[in-house]
Length: 136
Image (tube, rainbow, N blue to C red):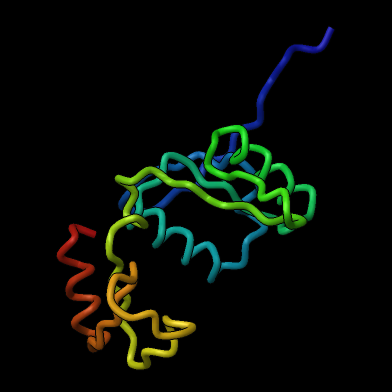
């Protein structure tokens, strides 16, 4: 009789530690992608990482999970359209500042005051200095 077992994969980040991988295999990621993921994990400190393969079945699986959690709600009038409701304490519900040289990079159209996103023209060096001050 076979014994139930689990194959566990961790993403090891130098100077940070390990983060479990819930889906996917980091060994298949190109070196630049591994570096990007490592930087983002160190910055955001997630409990785990899910590596997406981009398949329709995976999209359906993730959509079903988010629907069951109450994060997504299907809009019946349209096919494959959902409304996402997040926790008000989530950063996405607060003003967001995006640094870029061109306003058009971050705004599809000018909405006026009261929008969640605000355009900030800032030099890249100043942005990274601000980022480093977050104890990154």
